[in-house]
Image (cartoon, rainbow, N blue to C red; front, side, top):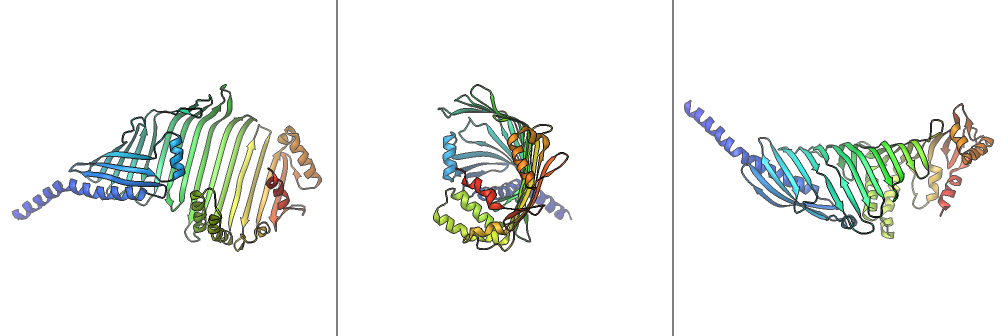
Length: 421
């Protein structure tokens, strides 16, 4: 019995002595696999060196921008297209803790602290100290950013949650203009599937302004935000997405606006065709004849499987009594084929609806709107309500069909916009 006890104690001691080494070895595999998975067509990630110790390790990684357009833009902004990161890693009982900094870049005070579980799940905390970037020349500027943070969690399955906090950003152009932003924050959760981000993201700004050379505001806004959400239908293999923009207290060179709200969505897009087209355009912004030939089968597939575009809400409030709101939806029905050979068949195939409202105050304030409203009233295309004027119509066989049965070809509405220089 005593021998068994001694053996168990000895085994436990041996395990305790070997465990930091095991954690280090497991951690090295997790980190090397994670770095390898960061590589893409745009960025190459690689482990330059990995010095594994008993209780700690030192790792050097390198990240190189492969996208020539992005690399050129970074050079213009005075930023490198290749960075080397040095990481000090501590071996815990069930996790690895690391502090990482940029090598030979003291002018960019960025520190990343991570805690990685042995299963690969990682908590991260990216800290940017007060940062100033100066670029010379007529188009140069001084960029100043207050201490900022990006915190979140990444699971081994690719799920990501994050919180961004940037108290203020100031850009002083050498020409005299200035851009100010304060209270910039963001939250997100989701994961990347192929070329799609699936989940939700929100970006908020407390105040933003653009100043002219004489420091008069060209543009400003308060308490505004952008929200993006997307989803994937596993059964139908389609993607859908929604974009919401809410801007408040806008001041522009054309005047002041109390509020602007936009809620735009598209959905039921065949994921494979849509991804191919997105990647094709991203890799070749100026499409060649060969690129267009490559895109044709994906365009055909996209239309044949059907999709929709919807403006759930587009509202502009100039003042208490002056506002405009519109919503519409356009659907490409399933089975819409041969669109690249005969584009003229697209408009007759579309279905949808339109609902637009003009307040009485808006019509009174802007005579050019009133003139159009009066003409529409004569044609009985618009209805007068207690609050203002409303237009409702359905899209059928290439025509907008109004409640009184009158029809206007959709092409007649699109031609003036298409013919503008």
